[in-house]
Image (cartoon, rainbow, N blue to C red; front, top):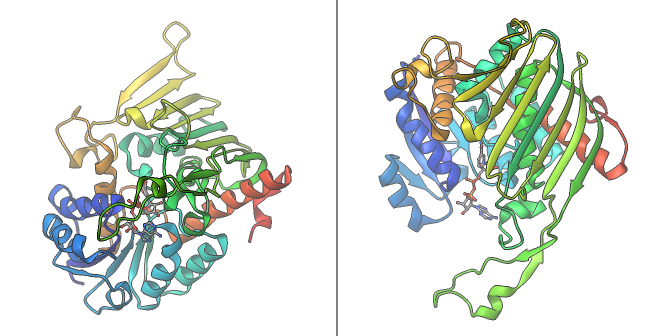
Length: 394
Ligand SMILES: NC(=O)c1ccc[n+]([C@@H]2O[C@H](COP(=O)([O-])OP(=O)(O)OC[C@H]3O[C@@H](n4cnc5c(N)ncnc54)[C@H](O)[C@@H]3O)[C@@H](O)[C@H]2O)c1
C-alpha cells in the first residue's frame, strides 16, 4: 500500500482555504500511515487558481473537474463546492473509483443525497467522508466519550442550537439564500451540524419530528452586482432585489430511539450570537454543556457528587492522553481553534485510508443521508403542522 494519498480539491473559497490548510498541516502534527499530497486544486476562475495553488502548495490547478475526478493520479476527491454541485461531482468521483470527502449538507435535495448514499454503498473500492467537523473539537469528542462511557446514565434531553447573525436584511442574495443552489437556508447549513452531533453524542437515531417551524423573515435581498470589464454597474443596478426562497431559521422538536427527547434551533438572524453552536445533554447521572464560541471548554455536572460541592465543572479539553487530539498539538493547556478541527479530520481520513482506526468515528455518506432524512422530516412537519416519523422519509 502506498504511503501517500493524492488529493484533488474542488472549490477554493472559504472551505477551499480551510481544507488546503488541513492537508498542509496534518502530517506535520500527526503520525499518519498515509501522507496527503496536494495534487490538484479545481475552480472556475482561472485567474484566481494560479496564485491559490502557489500560496497553498497545490502541485497542479484546473478548471475542468470532470477530467480531474477521473485522473488515474488522484486517490481522494474533496467536494467543497456549493451544495447544488455536490451530487454530480461526488457521483462522478465514486464511479471513477475514488474516495470522496464531501462538504455538508450532503446534497441540496433528499433525492440526490439518497443517490449519493446508494452509490457509496454500491462502491466496493471507495470510502466516503462528510465534513461534519465539530465532532473533531476535542471538547465535543470528549463529551461523546463521557456519554458513551455511561457517565451520564440514561439520556433524557439533548438541547442543541446553532445561532448566527450574519443573515440580516443587508446581506446580499448569495448562493446560500437561493434554493436552487443551497437546497435550504439555516436548516441545511446549521441544523445539519447539530443533528449530526446529536446522533454522534447519543449514539441514537432520531425517530420522529413532533413539530417544527421554518421561517423566512427576509424574502427579498439585494442581488450582488456582477462586475463588468468597465467595473461595477451603476448604483441603480446595485439596488436590484431578488427572491430569497430559503428559510432564515428552523426550529424543531424530536424523539430519539431510546427515549431521549431533543430540541433543535438554527438561525442566521440571532443578533449577537455570531457562531454559537451550543448543546446541552441531561442524563440521570449528570449533564454536559458546550458552546463553540468557547470551544476548548466542556462543562460537566455530575449529579452524584456530594451535596455540598456538587456543581458545574469547567474542563479545559487540552490534556494529552485524556482529551481526543490534544496530544497532537501543543503542550497541555494551550488552546486550539476552528482550523484545527479540519486538520484533525484530515488526520482521521488518512488514518482510515491507511488501515488504522480514526481517533473519532468519521461520518460517511450513509450518516449524512440519515441527517438529511431528519432535516426533511422537520421541513414536512413545519409545512403540514404535524408530527412526521423519520422512517416515512425514504
Ligand atoms: N463544514 C463546515 O463547517 C462548513 C463551513 C462552511 C461551508 N461549508 C460547506 O462548504 C461548501 C462550500 O462553501 P464555502 O463556504 O466554501 O462557499 P463560498 O461561498 O466561500 O465559495 C463558493 C465557491 O463556489 C463557486 N461557485 C460555484 N457556483 C456558484 C454559484 N452558483 N454561486 C456562487 N458561487 C459559486 C464560487 O466561485 C466560489 O469559489 C458548501 O457546501 C457549504 O455548505 C461547510
